Length: 107
Length: 277
Image 1 (cartoon, each protein chain N blue to C red):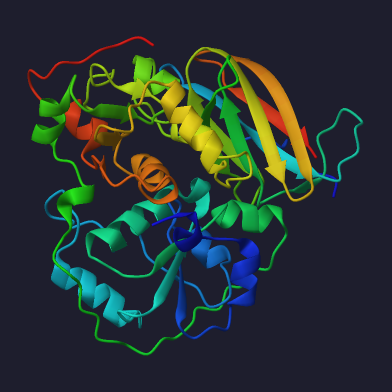
Image 2 (image 1 turned 90 degrees about the vertical axis):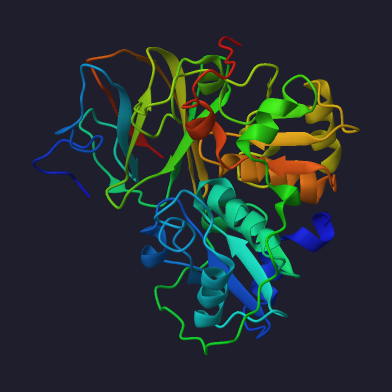
């Protein structure tokens, strides 16, 4: 599906103390077209793993029905790994306090 | 108490979905997962509402455990098969719980809910109705549970295994990275603890590594299997996972889970704490 209106990405940040939390979040979409505009169907049963700068596992969350996920990390470099039925994707990010990382990951 | 008696595969589950003596129980950290879909015929236990005392910080009483299992139609001779999300963290905690109260035949689905979903296997939303039973639990077996004074007395003597992530062990984070970084405890770890994150015992799909790999993992990190071992994490669930690996898969009998874990230890006045890798 083409998204219309709200831009895909992680859950609403209202209520999150961004000054003190290092947020890495995003949405997992399937079947999108790579044309610069985020699109595709949300994947609600994906597993998202957060690996630290040494590749060590730090946390894992399932996506919600909107395909969204969120981590509270620490400043530094991290790898986000998405696992879903028949798919695996990796994204490297540089996280910092104050400015959340908001990813759109197509599988 | 070995891989053969404690662990079942997703194939075994599919073959036993209609086996009347088998009761599948889902235990998740995210308690909304069961409602969204579960293995056909499975019931669910809520890790907090069903398995925590609620008034004091402790396991539920023997009487409450008996009532919980009776209400859900679990008999003393049922084969209880546990699984859950989050790589079976809370399911292994429930497994440890069933062992505390002496259930004879309890098993875990290797890979848990994650492997089931990654394989694209079916989930249903129907909640089964089960005929109540009369379950009789045994007195608590505290030989698989560690308490804080035992932990403090074990520093430098027994193996203490901190199964949290390296960032929590070093004191960089206070909680797993999918939770807000709050909490009254100070950060760090029990001095002398070996940091062997629970996740190193699991493959990416949630299944356990082979016994050879698991034994090497703990030995390489300096765990002496001839000594007693205490596993801890933040609240006792991830350490139940590692307790399962050591006590059930590797069949080591002298292994305890410190379920008070860092939320208790990190709040104690005057106990020794270490930081850094």
